[in-house]
Image (tube, rainbow, N blue to C red):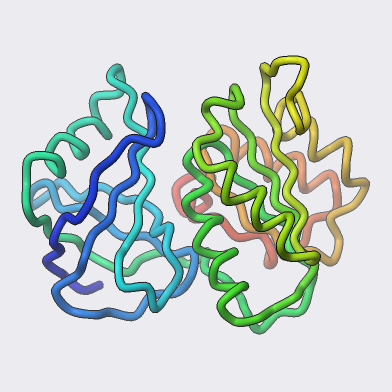
Length: 232
């Protein structure tokens, strides 16, 4: 990994629990769609966040879930708000887009796991790929789905991409599914044989997904998620 100084261009809230951060690296560096960086808070305190922008973008975009009650990520947001620059270490992660593959893709995001998925989708668009892709994004409420506007735009603009928003609690006029994310996936797919699957979210959800997917025929060499490096 490289240690890189970044100018902090923007720290703004998407909502009351998620912040959009934009960083301008002093030196360009190569990364693959779906990789992550670490914010250096101290010599032994380095905190990982998915890179939400695609490779080749001028700015690095992060989505930091930081409700006031969540001290660990909120410390990062406060540091970014009060500083002009920050050090990062990048790139890291093995769950990057296998863009040479022509297998259909299933992209799964829980909460701010969407940042990981956003990089992958934007790289597919940049490469001009038209591989059949299903994107499932699960949140507790529609308000928590902080960037659904861009996902709905992709759905409208690109015939190969199908966006399925899933929330646990929704008003009557909600245009999407009302369900638990994994329950919705189990309803919609009988078998996962043949898919490249990319997943990001809280570790318990990702771990439960892998167990469920095993019962659905997943080929684990085609199941990608950085959480799997930390959960057994």
